[in-house]
Picture (cartoon, rainbow, N blue to C red):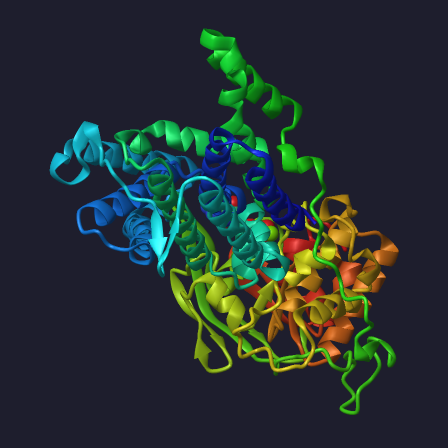
Length: 580
Ligand code: ADP
Ligand code: MG
C-alpha cells in the first residue's frame, strides 16, 4: 500500500511538474527527486537495519565528484559516468565496512562520522582532483544514445523515473519474508541468528546498496546543477538526508519520497520569512518530529505480509492426520530428516565462575530429553553453547557426524539446530505470520525441496502449534502463552533436525501446559528430537523420555524420568530444596 502510494505519488509529481510547473519549480522538484533517491538508500541502512550511518552524505559526494570528474576531464558519456558514480561509493562503503560494520550502534555512528569528515577534508584539500574550494564547473547535461536530457521537463521525468525504479528495488529488498528477516535482525538480533539469518552479510548488502543509491543521486545532482561544489561534501547534506528520513518516516519508501519533497520545498516556502527562515524551518521540522514520531508515512499503516488465503493441500486431511509412516505430520509440510545431537565434555567458564564442566548429552530422533537443575546450574548456558551463542571452552558438539562446535549461530541454525529462548525474543511490530515467515529458509536454500511456498510453510507451522488463527495479529498484542507457542512455530519454520526449548511452560496455565505437552509429543512422534529445559515437573516428567539433571554446571543424574526423580543426588540438589 505505502509502496504503491510512493510509486503513484512519484508519477503524479513528475506529471504535474511537466504539465504545470514553471522552470524554477521544475528544478526544485528535480532536486527533490534526487534527494528522494539518496534517502531511499539511507532508509535501507538507518531505517531497516536501525544503524545510524553518518556516511550517506559522503557517498552522495563521491557520486557527484565521480560524475563531475569523468564528464569534464575525460568527457566520458553518461552511461559510463553514472555507473562509475554508483560503483565508486559502493567500493568506498565496502572498504570501510570491514572495520565499521562490526561496531555497536554508537561506535558505528562515530566511525561513519569520521569517514564523513575525512571525505570533506579530501574534497576541499585535494585540489588537483576536486578543484578544492572552487569545485568542478561545466558538468554537461545528460546525453546518451544520441539523446540529450536537458534540465527542465526531461531531467525531471528521468529523475522521478529513477525514483520509481528505486522504490521498486527498495520494495524487492524489504517486502515479505525479506522484510520480516530485517525486522527480526533489527529488533531481536539473537533470535535472528537462531533462525539462520546471516547478520553480517545482510548488513553489508544493504550498506552497499544504500551507498549505491546515494552515488546515483550525487551523479544526477551534478548534471542537474552543472557544478560539483565542495558543499556536496559538507555535513549539511548528511543532516538533510537524516531529517528527510525521520520526517518522512523511518524505514519507509513512501517516507523517503515525502520527506525529500517536503524538506526540499520548505526553504522555498519559508523564503518569505527572510532572515527568520531558519527558525521557521527548525520549528516546522521539530513540530513534525514531536507530533508524528513515526513520520508522515506513519499516518498510513504498514500493510503486513498477507497469509495465504488459498488453503494449502494438507488442510483437507487435517493438520496432524497420521501419514502412512505412522508419524503425525501435516502432509505437504516439508521436513528434513531428524538428526542426533551429541554433546561431549562441554565446559564453560565466565571469569572465575564455572558455568559448565564436562557435560555430556545425547538427543536422538523422536526422543524428548528433559534438562532440569536449580537456577544458575548452567541449563541456558548449555543451550547457548549448542546453538552457537556462546563459545565452549572445552568439548565438542556434533549433529550426526558433523562437528558444529564453534560455528556461528546462524550457520548452526541452518544446519538444523533450532532453539527457543527463556524469554521469547520476537519482533513486536510484526504479525505472527511474519515472525514465522522470517524463519522460512531463503529462496536459494537446498532445504526448499517441497512444493509448498514459504508462506504456506509459515502458516503450516503456526497450525502445528494451534495458533494459525492468530496469523494476522501483531506479536506485541499476543499473550505470553501465545508468544511462547509462536516462538516454537518460528523454530519449526527453519525445518529443524533437532529442537531446543528453554523453559517453554514457564508462565503457562494448566490447560495451556497440557496443550503444549501434546503438541511437543506430536512433534517427537514426527521424528524430531527435542531438548526441554524445565522447572515445572508435572509438565516435564510425563513428557520426557529421559531426564538429565545439572547442578552447578555438572551432570549429577541421568535416566528415565522416574529414576531421576528418585536419584539421591538430584533430590538433594534440586528436589530437596523445593519438593516437586
Ligand atoms: P540456568 O539456565 O540453569 O538458570 P544459566 O546457564 O543461565 O543457568 O547460568 C549459569 C551460571 O552462569 C549462572 O551463575 C550465571 O550467572 C552464569 N552466567 C550465565 N551467562 C553468563 C554470562 N554471559 N556472563 C557471566 N556469567 C554468566
Ligand atoms: Mg536458564
